[in-house]
Amino acid sequence: MKATDLTSGKELAREVAVAETFLSRLKGLLGKKELPPGEALWIKPCSSVHSFGMKFPIDVVFLDRDMRVVAVARELKPGRVSAPRSRARSVLELPAGAIDSATTDIGNRIEIA
Image 1 (tube, rainbow, N blue to C red):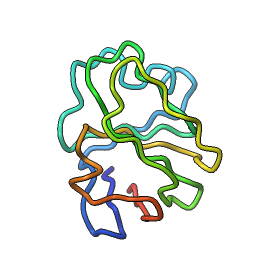
Image 2: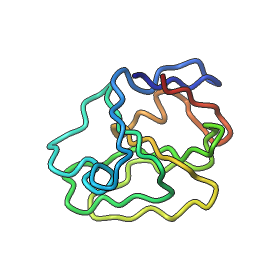
Image 3: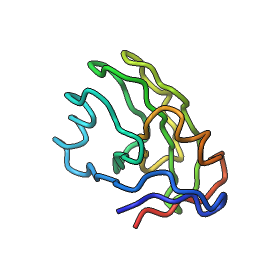
């Protein structure tokens, strides 16, 4: 699957993995040395993330049920927790800098297919 910002028309990721079981959501990106450009992890359901045990910063896009961006966290550093977003139903974890590269902002619509 790939993730595209339909509002800006730009690609966020070419390879999107999905974490939708308890264990896969719990593990997330833990154990990875990096999140290469073009890759992402879509966690659902989810309204907050942490980066404890991670070795690299990530960008996080918080999505509502209609796949609209309700919040973003740029370059979430290791050992941090994002604020919970009450309207978020899923999150897309991306390499640091991906949000700015795709000019993704609150209100944009994202397609993951």
